[in-house]
Image (cartoon, rainbow, N blue to C red; front, side, top):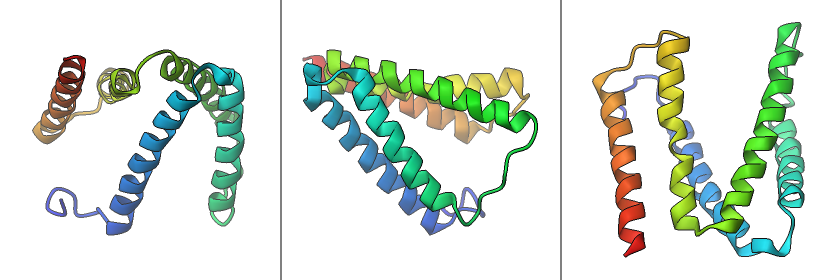
Length: 146
């Protein structure tokens, strides 16, 4: 992996892998909770815990937002809340192995937005990586249905 990006550090890779494990655990936990708790309750607990942990981790590096940054932060909070709410509803209503892979479609949408909105240019490795993600998602959904 080091050969693709000279800025890549082992600490970042470890955090990404740990994050992936915890995301999987969160999806399974949400599914296990099922219809026992209202999705808003689940999302509020998630947001409170995330704010506390994120606040503690960011306290040494905090920079006060100025001007439009407040609007950006507010919109991130509002859109993030509703995204989490509807993801929680989907996880509670469907099978985890059928719903969770759809979350990774955000990689494709992010690439499209980056391309058209920000004029980003992607390397062949990025495109191949996204194709591998789509192939993996498709195979996961198809093989789990059988």
